[in-house]
Amino acid sequence: MTSIDVQDLTKEYGRRRAVDALTFRVLPGRVTGFLGPNGAGKSTTMRLVLGLDRPTSGTATIGGRAYATLREPLRHVGALLDAQAVHGSRTGRDHLRAQAASNRIPDTRVEEVLEETGLTPVARRRVRTYSLGMRQRLGIAAALLGDPGVVMLDEPSNGLDPEGIVWIRGLLRRLAAEGRTVLVSTHLMQETASFADHLVVLGRGRLLADTPAREFVHARVRPGVRVRTTDAAALTAVLAAHGHHAVRHEEGHWTVPDARVDDIGRLASSAGVPLLELTAEEATLEQAYLDLTAAETEFTAPHQEV
Image (cartoon, rainbow, N blue to C red; front, side, top):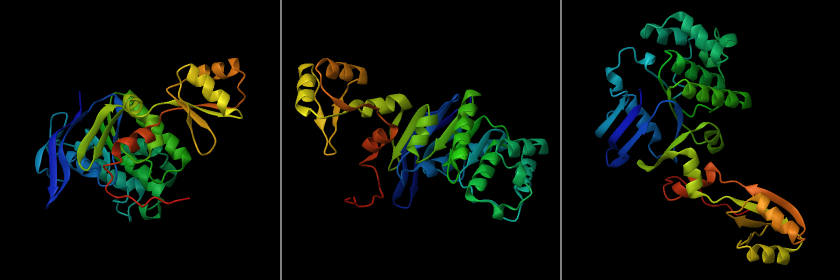
């Protein structure tokens, strides 16, 4: 079983501690979302796992081994940290061929990943002519080149169009279904909710959460029912009579916490309360994430009144 194991990992740059005694494990067979505000230490942690930085203390291993000790590492770990870090004068195909040659990967595999990422039609073009989305696809192609058991991607949806976002979502799910270990760092909460089975959340270099995605959301955000009516007095009376406390909002609607649409609709109907709106307010990953990280955000803009 090839897992990513981070144990008591610390990285200091002068007096600043970017990663602070971090411990977590990324397991195969699922997509792990790696979340946190800007400056939380996500990119530093990924660099430490890949041997691009040395830890001040602690360890980061892949399958029990440090990345630097892996022979032909692309066959074990595929990573995308910076899609712009590509020699612009090379063609997309030649860029992948150079990487393949360094790890004794056959050229046939280059053609396979070009096809898989949709880059075959532009494989002969120089990388400097690529759009951001095309460079992102090239970086993902390079990460898949060695058919690795571990895949680490930093903001893989960056620059992709809607079709590309749907594609990367399916790709991540497929990689996990094949039993690979998949770690994805991103700021896109809606996208993370669509593909992540598990979440590791950082704040100021420390571990804030290491939990299944569904449990993370449900533990922090209460679902409810959104109601709009022309007879607020009748609505609140019937809800109170059945143990529900409705919260009024300035926009004119009411929220009933910890309730189901069917139950509220049945109560309103039996009491003859006219309803203009009756919808479920589902708990979202974004709400849960913001609730957890509100005190951990290093860079914030002032609130704008509208």
